[in-house]
Length: 494
Image (cartoon, rainbow, N blue to C red):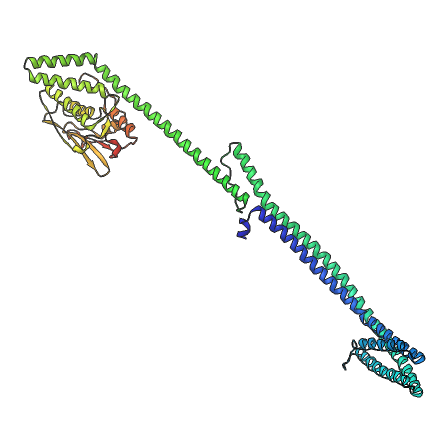
């Protein structure tokens, strides 16, 4: 069955034609053989009567030729007698010679024996004629005539009895022949129905999948890609086309899903880009609000640094140079990313400025894994956190304040920790900052204007992940630790 399903349509049609042809041929052959057999039987019914008639004719021919020879005594009549005797002997060979219980066969045996005796008598009569023994051939002739008439009567009786028996057999055979014709007609009708069903099944197995495929193709052409796939039961040409159609529909679905996913990703990236751009513009605006003509300020600071150097005020010169570097970095990197190395340099400049302004009351220490200095991060993410620790953490405390910055590697990420020993935070305050509910109110000259919310949002957009920022504090007066979690992929490096 599996091999049939995998055959081509051409081979299926050829197989169906050959099967139909051989089936019809076989049925007709059986019917023809049966009719021939019955006809042969019918012919055999009267064959015995025909043989007896021929035997009687041969016997009459022998008797006539003998009589003619006895009357004429010529060589032609003698030759005719011998030929007829031979023919009669040949006919006698067809008769039964065995003793049996069948009365008719026994009558045949008797006819054979009596005829042989008759021939013996006729031979003696002809020999007596040739020897001119008149008395003897007359006696033999009279005896032959008597035997001839008796044998003919016996043959006639056997022929009549054969005819009666054969008539009954003929009627039975004729009835059997009529039944055979009826059975043959029924068989031909059944074969016709079977062939019709076979042709219908084969054509349906070909046209059914084609109709199914055509309906599905029309639905796809109308834009419905959620159609049911075409069931494939045969691997002929139609099955191969249906399989290809199913694969095409599946490929189109996958392609459409990919297009949809790509569009969604593109929209998300566009949204992320717009949000990132908004945060950067917001940061840039706040910096611009905190600056008055930055380039003029840079030139002025540089001029002040040169003047302090010329006057020998080294500390003033260093202070002014750090101020210039700080503002230059702000303007240069506001719309770019930066290496951790650059971010740390900005923190150093910022803390130097603060310590000059506030008399060195901020103690800063850092510990950095130097293999991570070239890691790329969004610009301006460390300075706002350090600024927040200085302004809101350790400013105004009664004990010595310090800020510690650590950059180190964990198995699956890179961590940046900024910790102070200042006033600390409550859990509610931490929640408000992490959820963006806190209001950045302190935009005075003591702040750059970029708060923790801005840093958190830009980190999440930059790395496309939520878990990038954490704030820890044991409560008021117990300090605060801010943790940044950065991915450790190689592409994040310069």
